Image (tube, rainbow over all chains, first blue to last red; front, side, top):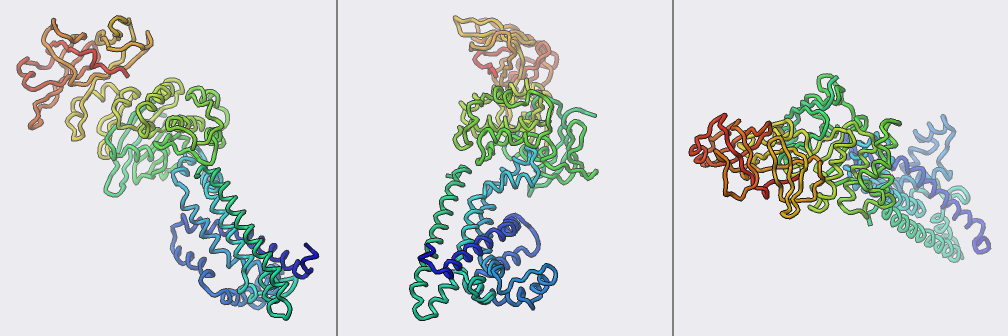
Length: 232
Length: 364
């Protein structure tokens, strides 16, 4: 494998997997919370929250990346705050790539989880309440297991989106080999240099393999989970 | 501190208003009434799934809800078991984990009778433990739901038409378990039903609910034989509910003698447990009234009594009237025509003979 890929290519693959996995895991708690609010909450501004979550889906990725640059760049209001108080720098770092791909994958994750929460039978939650479970336990023992297929689907969608994310990432954190050069950026770079076709093809094949594996994994997990909840 | 349930609530649900007052102590209290009369809403108020607009709900003297006092105990702290019409088992958990669900949250210790082996035995569900709810029959599902509620060690058990979604065979399968529950578990039960046969068989107290109001509440035999209830727009023919003990069996003719305070009655069946206590029910229109004992008649049972109550005869276009007859302290209801009432010259205190066909006596 290492012979087949050059060290730089191998680094891009590893970095992409790291960025996508981190983006998926880091946005999961917030994704669950927002999905819960949208599915169950009744509050002023719910439609605004809904629109805000879906914004990255409809905006050109470059616009999202540029907005991130303005807000989270070193001179940006949030970026400066993070740097001053926590020493966290996002722009032109792999963590910035995580933020960009998480933002892009977030709507897909929230959508899948929200639908599965809406599909949970509230009557089962009432039943759990009469058996002595407080709302937090009802969520953990009944709601969460019942929407597990949707959560898994949301995570895989977010992962796949993060693996393929290009526009926002390259705008926000550029294309630095070893730091922010993910698979799509690396493929793009290959296509920009003479004689790069072979490298582009190798990475393209790897990209296809990872995406198809993720798809199969999600199908298998969803089947397993829905068999567990008896919804065959 | 007063034992039992004490409810005074008022709550609007759309165009429907629940305005109910109910007191009951121990045993099985049946909430009986037509569909849409507010029975389930009332049970949801007791469970805490509905927060009423005003009033109070007290259990054994403890306020679960009191609008004036600003008290609302959330459902999970009430320790009130609830068996829903459609079982509501958790599909992602095995039968064993469903049963033990409430145990994770119930206080430790307490009565031995709510231990898993005892409950499995009471409900006959020991062989189902490893199964999933999706693989159970309707009757099995409902028994597991009852077990699940019991194992949460409730102070009160609510059952909302637990048999309504089952066919007759499955009902017959579960009814004995509910009787055992009432007699052995020692947990007061509130049982919702619109089936008179179930109510007559199970209830110690009957509350009749119509249009969101409790229109009558009292001991089962008294309430079901009340004459004034027959005047309600919701047609209920009064019936007599009498408790007796199983006596001699006449195998040649397939009859069993039941000894009651009103007198002996032969029922056209065998197979009852000798010496056991049984309830019989007789519809008012199945009772014949005579001034003196009658011979040369097919009916096997004749009881002496006196006319204790004459129902209202004020219904236009209806020639029927209901009589309450006191037979040795039991109350028998008879429905006859106003013409017969006049022809026999019946008035309060008149001695009469009530004649009942054995085939019309329902054993519960």
